[in-house]
Amino acid sequence: MSPTTRPIRVLVADDHPVVRRGMTALLASLDGVEVVGEAATGQEAVREAQLNSPDVVVMDIQMPAMDGVEATRRLTALLPDVAVLVVTMFEDDETVVSAMRAGARGYLLKGAQQEEILTTIRSVAAGQFVIGPGVAARLLGHLDPAPLPAVPFPDLTTREREVLERIAQGHSNTQVAADLALAAKTVRNHLSAIVTKLGVRDRTAAVILAREQGLGGGTPGSGP
Image 1 (cartoon, rainbow, N blue to C red):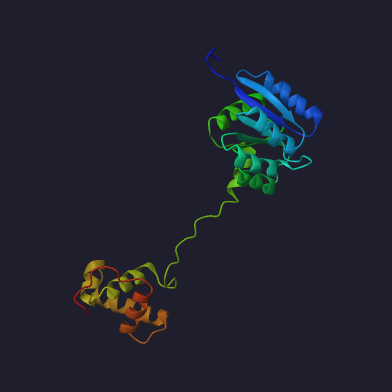
Image 2 (cartoon, one colour):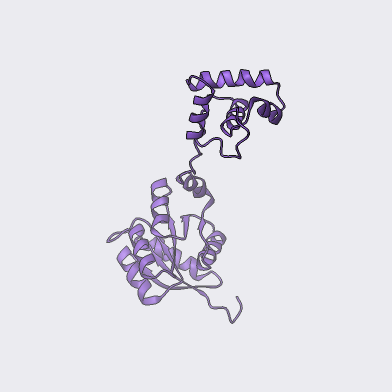
């Protein structure tokens, strides 16, 4: 560490004395890290963070008098510049998601290697968002995928939809045939299939239905 580089100030919160002291000793041995306090409960974690102004709080999940998720939520509200790194034995999906929604910037499982812990502490202190590789895939599984846009008239083939799009624009059969490099008879056959699949009486009704579904938005042609 450069003599001019300020060490990362860390607060350790864990209700198990042996685990807490072990984590404190580990962190104290790392270059560029200074342990500024310990806490055995969620309430203590919030209080000690306010008193000692750490850069990072290493937070356990299961603690008495306020669990780690609630403590993270309060710390994020009170001290938004303090990064919370959850280090816990619990890797169930609900715990991971709850911690992240509460504002944790990182999530590691206990037993992570010393170098991984140091790298993660440096990353969250720098404002990055880090989760252990074993947790990442499941966390992504909780993200809602973007809904796919509904396709009008799913029973139509791609070619039939192309024909319907053009007649909805007002193109004649001859124009549709030229646009799609089809024979005029083939266009008529597609139109017949479209009318049947849409359950309408004729071409005009098919055009009206298509336009109601947003087809035919291009420049109108010369008409049927």
